[in-house]
Length: 104
Image 1 (cartoon, rainbow, N blue to C red):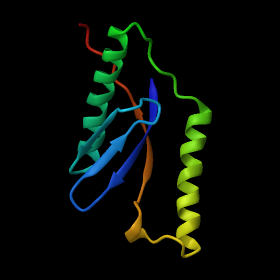
Image 2 (cartoon, one colour):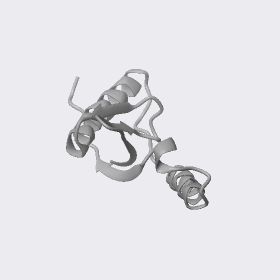
Image 3 (cartoon, rainbow, N blue to C red):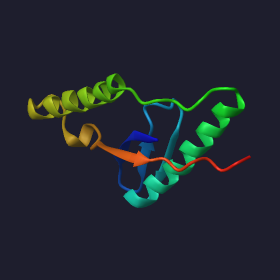
């Protein structure tokens, strides 16, 4: 399984969220640490959903395009002078390969 994640850096941490998995978030001090930590969070999210009888969530092209569109709007606002990097976030999209969940 592959999922798109959003990385949001600040001065000390990089926060990561998984748009296809509501509430699935993590953070790390470096990009690599943040990615490793969100992989653990994804595994926990998938296991929790499985306990409730739900299968893995599939990321849809519509979801990814909506996230990409939001990032483009933020960039357009900055270029037009309506928003500055200081008043918003520097966001990055990345794709992660999800590990198979450990057996319960």
